[in-house]
Image (tube, rainbow, N blue to C red):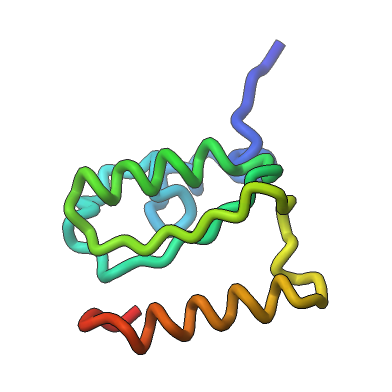
Length: 102
């Protein structure tokens, strides 16, 4: 049985080593990344990878803003509703309330 992380399904082997495709699987120096915003959803199949990325960014001392929505599912941002408006407002506050540009 071949086990594959859901984030790698459909990605060629050479692309998995490409830091533009798979930042967690690359040797990219995370310290060189700009301030970063990560938005996660509690019912997202990619949540473990997103949390791992957030942890690595913190360890690398990258300025990180992490917004977590525990009751939402993968792709929820593409749905229309007040939740999307709330997220956009939070992002707007982060951008205008910090000395770092996102």
